[in-house]
Length: 377
Image (cartoon, rainbow, N blue to C red; front, top):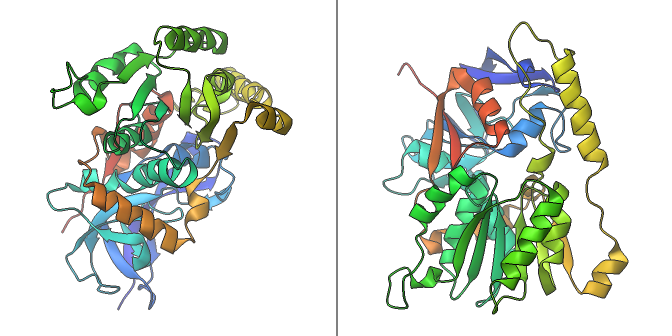
C-alpha cells in the first residue's frame, strides 16, 4: 500500500493559537497493527487549547499535531473493522488531520443513526464523565452531585449518565445565565412523581457567581434554602481556581471532589490579527494575568483532608490511554446506558481551526465544538 498526502494542523512551537499552521504531509501506509481512517469530523477539547498554548503537561511543546478524538470511515481493514465502516476513535494527540493511521483498539463502530459530528463528540467527554462517576467516585444511588460547567461537553455527558442512575440529586452550575435555558429545556424538571421526568425531581441549574467569595455565599444560601440538603457527595469540577474552596466547603463528609480540568486558568483569547503580535501589550497583559492565576491556584492540606473526612481526586484521561482494557470496560458501560447522541453546539470547517479554538477558549460555548473535514472523493 502506498503513502498518501494528508492535511494536518501543526504547531511548530507551542505558546499561542496563532502558532497553528495548516500543511500537507505524507502519511505512510498503516503498520500491521493499524487501520487507516478517513476523518470526517474532529471533536475539540479544552486539552487542545492548553496543548497549543504549551500549558498541557502531557503534550509535546514542539512539532505537535493536536487533537484527541475523531470520527470517520475505515479505508483499510483490520482488528474487526472492514473498509467503509463508520467509526469513532481516540488518539494520543494527532487528530487534527484529514487521515489517520490508528490502532483498532482505540476505535469503535459509530452507533446507528449518529452523524459524524455526534460520533466525534462522544468518546473523550463520556469516558471522562463515567471514569469520574463510576471509577473514582463510586457513586451510589441517592447521592447528591454538583456538576460544574454543566452545559459543556463533559458536563452534559455527566448529566446523561447521572440521569440513568436512581434517585440522584443534581445541581448543575454554568458560567453565564444564557446557558440556563438550554439546560432547563434539555433536562426539564419534574412537576410531580407521575411526571415522566420524575427522576429529575431534585435537579436544579444555577448561574455561578463571578468571584470565589460570592460563589461561597451562593453555595451556602443554596444549601440552607433546601432543608433536606446537607451538602454534596460528589463534585465534578472542570473549573477549579477560585471556586475550588467554596465547593470543597459544600461537600459532605466522605464526599469526593473530582477535578479533571482547570478552565478558570484559561487565558482570554489572544488577539490573532496581524496587527498584534504575541508580545503586544494586550497579549503580554493576558500572559501576566495567566501567570498570576497559576500562582494563586488553590492548595490542599493533606491533614485537613483527614480531619474533614473528604477526598480530592484529580485525573487526566490521556494518562489512561495505555490502559486499553480499562477504557474498553468503561466504553462497554457507556454502551449499556444507551445514551442519546451528544449535543453539537458549534460547527467549523477544517480550515477554520484557529477560530474554533478561540471560540472554545472564550468559555461561551454550549455543548461540543466540532470541526468538519471535507474530502474531494
